[in-house]
Image 1: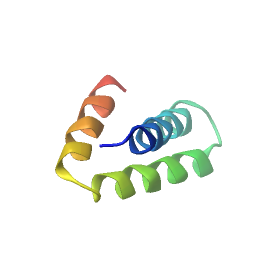
Image 2 (image 1 turned 30 degrees about the vertical axis):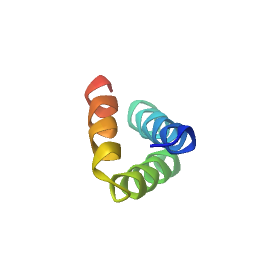
Image 3 (image 1 turned 135 degrees about the vertical axis):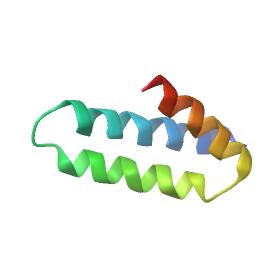
Length: 57
């Protein structure tokens, strides 16, 4: 798992959290969700990493 992939996953979770916890930021939620789905489809290790990030959220 590369550092770029981890950075994209962290950015996706950050945007997802920003979209969830603020008003009128559906765009951030959707972009974050798209990044998370893309990362989850890339491999088993990335899914485990995303699971840990989402548990933190």
